[in-house]
Amino acid sequence: MKKIVLITGTSTGFGKLMTQTLAQAGHTVAAGMRGTTGKNAAVAQELAALPNVNVVELDITSDDSVQQAVADTLARHGHLDVLINNAAMTGYGLLEAYSLNQMRAMLDVNLFGVLRTYQAVLPAMRAAKHGLVINLTSGASGFAVPFMGPYLISKFAVETATETLQDELRAYNIENVTIQPGVYPTEMNNGSKTGINADRADIVAEYGDAATQHFNTIGAGLYGKMIEFDMNPQVIADGVLALLNMPDGTRPLRYPLDAIAQGTDKEFIESRAAIKAKWALNYGFGQPEETAVEAATV
Image (cartoon, rainbow, N blue to C red; front, side, top):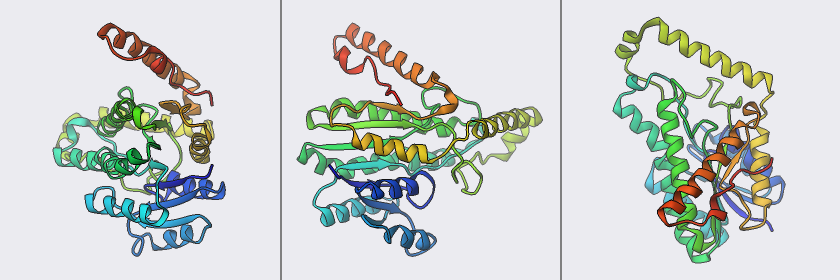
């Protein structure tokens, strides 16, 4: 069955590919982005020219913008089947070298942006007793990586919110899924899109050359792996389409799409779910069959 889908962050990268892929498959897409009449006017016109696509002005850092975009989508289509939280900002640097204001900026986009869209769409989805929310997180959003602390803090928080809502919304038949993409050559990772990076130069200087060399080594390694495994962003768009096509009630909580991980991401997800199921039983709540295995075979 074809669905009404709202996607955030569709001007570039995964979001643009998702819009094109889902629309081509016959789904109706509300493509959300900032600056539809300004800096993103050209891509807005490009996507709006596609069958099954209407472009929606959407700034995920603005309560009013999010509420208006959802209201416009509901008014146009009468209902909303799927929300895809794709919009995000990356960022690198020493955790100590992030000012609190810079941390807040990261969380406002990557975490509060997701919570804003949830709060906007859930009343209609709960009334319909039907819905699907897909949140893009990170292949490393369950553990820490040096120089990516604030970014991964925000993504792990989205994992937590998704898992919480999966249980809280079960009675309303609203499914929640996180996609763990790994490293792909999108504007977010190739340097063409400015990230929310560490901004305390004095702290960076105190750590000295050793920290800079460590950071450069990690970055070079990630870039090398991305090339070695030929990481194609279309994989993520195709994964989203696969999730939409799954029968209701069968979608996994977590859906890893990272060739570089070579299966360790699925292993981590499955082991974490199994441990959680035991923990929940020890505390006297939860159903083991609901949490024991979360990873999909992809």
